[in-house]
Length: 474
Image (cartoon, rainbow, N blue to C red):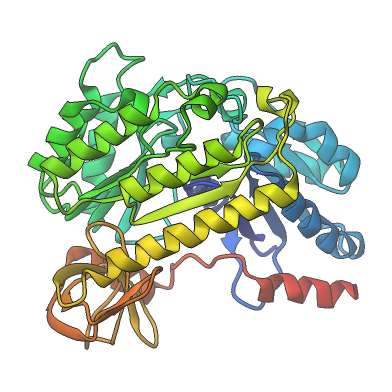
């Protein structure tokens, strides 16, 4: 009997993407193989998000798309994990009874056994644990990239933001032991990884559970000093926990990149209080001022929600004002999504869709204008760019995380570093037509080894799903 094949479709944040690497590692460890392009899989796993409503809609759309294929091929399996599975297991059973396995955020390691049990018993398996079985990093992992890696330093969240359901799904914050983090970081670098991103729901709160003051700043320095590591990043910090020793660590450690992604959510103190965000606009702007004083070339990005319940025109203008003042290189903007089970869902003065969309458009236009101006200021400047993709042209990231498109450089592979001059710019990316130097790295070598070995991860795409639809006759 040939090995069963699978694909994983991921919704949501970097933490979910990292979880998908673990799901993939678990399945490979259990004898599954990744589906080749153009072939139908034996298993589709959906790793879900519960933060916004459109993720729910997308999942149920995908499930209805797969239903005819499931009906025509009983051996085909569907599994749903992640935050939405943790929250809505009963709703999933009701709306998609043909799903074989539903598993939560706390028991990813159970997936292979649940799939086997579902096949043997010919019955859906639903297993949701209320607390973490194992720290996820102890599970097998198959990274999507040979040269860049996520490294989880904590899981869960101790905050009680009124719009967010994550703490109830991921649990309270748990910190990973420092020695385990450092051991994994060293192992990653030994495998050829040149860029590491430290992950946590509130990454800079690391050390609270361990009772260690200044733990995150010292961790940045320790990981950043590992020989062979080119770039170290982290996300996402919470303004409440952001301390000056972190700024000092960023400035003093060359491998820590000059990029800070720090969610703002709103520029109105009234709205921040209603969101139960434990800082105000003055503190947020003060952090940015101190970061830029220590690291003048730092790029700062953020998250902003528009249309939170009770947000007045004046509140929204205060958000626009802080965007003008902060001059973010980019902002990830979202329309407020009413999530059942959160305090904000039952607040009075919910904002209508038309007003919300109008504010979203205005904020997006302002940020595009600012991003375009910032990028234009870089024309003529020379940067080191980490190559992330090589196709008809190259794509890469500046140290401050801005996106750059470049012409092909002979012999360049993802993970290598080129020095180039920016020649033109738009709000969302820049172009560097002049390449001065190509520096081969162990990351590029690792990418080459993986590609030549034929073990590169194959992501789930529409061609595979379209093929399923064709087979099922739907």
